[in-house]
Image (tube, rainbow, N blue to C red):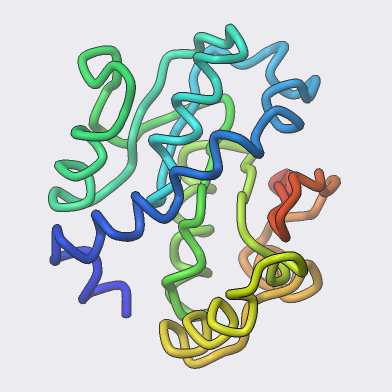
Length: 189
């Protein structure tokens, strides 16, 4: 699934737009103590623009980098608050935030991404929907979209932790964000 999305600006743009609501859920993440020592943050995934906006809104100003292929990077450039402030090349960072980066990937593709992130950082945060939003009339539809995208049901906390562990990461903690989303803080094993 990733290959299709990563080369289709319109489809990736739809994912970015679906992630716009994340900015309202990230207060718990941006208030977390992990940001106290962060000078550089590597972003990946269609939720990257929302993370950049949430960091700005919280007064957090780490140097931002984006780790994306050319098509997703071009789409994200149109959605981030200050594209000229971002280094659009992947590289070392104090923390990586993968925002909705796993949702459109198969387990194998997700593990490849997590392994790549390990080459750039010792701390990563996965922002994903771990369950459908119970208040949403579209919860069943969201679960079906997850299955159609990856061939698997929506990954719950245990499934995300298992992928992380198989990729050499340890789950440090999970931060509930609301609407079925959570941030899973990982440390390199």
